[in-house]
Length: 117
Figure 1 (cartoon, rainbow, N blue to C red):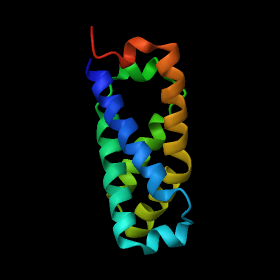
Figure 2 (tube, rainbow, N blue to C red):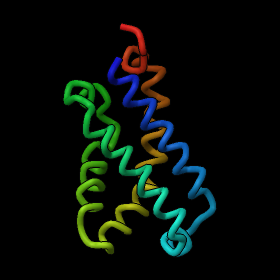
Figure 3 (cartoon, one colour):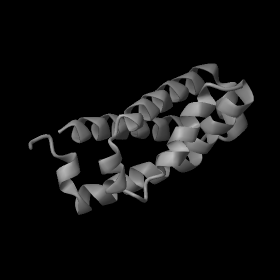
Figure 4 (tube, rainbow, N blue to C red):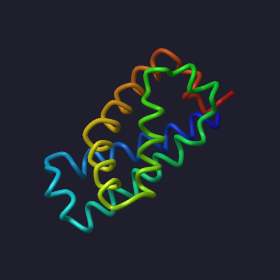
């Protein structure tokens, strides 16, 4: 059940990131204080939830870019340049891939997404 909650939060935040960044290019996104701040907030939610997913569950979902999310989380704690690069990489690569793989795993491993044990 815990996985289902974590994945629901991750998917919700990811959907919002995709909506907020749909037509933005890198410079435009980084120049927008409000949008960039909200995207970073959502990505921090995602990294926090991803950090809570057990090693056992991660092993059952090897296609997800767990190390990329860990690196993104660390980069957010670094310099502004590193944080901005991580944000852009997450927006254009990690978030879309994560959404796609969660949809695949929802079909392949529905027990990981079940709120009922």
